[in-house]
Amino acid sequence: MLIRSEGLAESMSRYLIRRIEDSQTIVVHPHTEIVALEGDDHLERVRWRDTQSGLVETHDVQHMFVMMGAVPNTRWVAGCLALDPRGFIKTGPDLSRDDLAGAHWPLARAPHLL
Image (tube, rainbow, N blue to C red; front, side, top):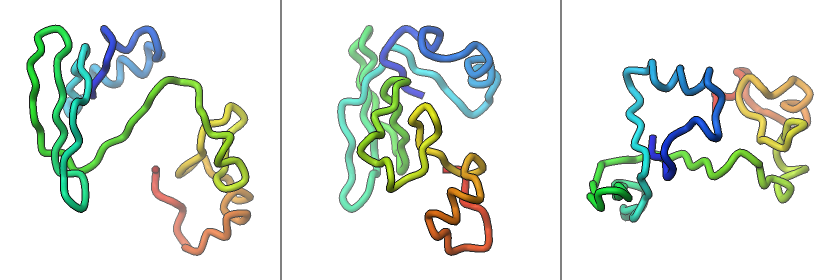
């Protein structure tokens, strides 16, 4: 997890921070910014820089989730995607039966998490 600031405390609940800290599979990189996304037909590598040391690292990465801030800018998808009352896009188990019916969900199974 790359974080441009000192850490997660200013923008995330303590409960979520604790879950991240307790995870064996998440490594937090504070003071870090992405400097390049590389690949031909799809994402293959990400280069990031530690803004304190200047060290640039390259890692093989095929998937990336970007979160920029905690205030959603989703007005432009209203009517196309299901939004919760705060404007966040509803996914997976957050989608109600009415949401799925309105979207003409074609599969017998529920949508995956994201």
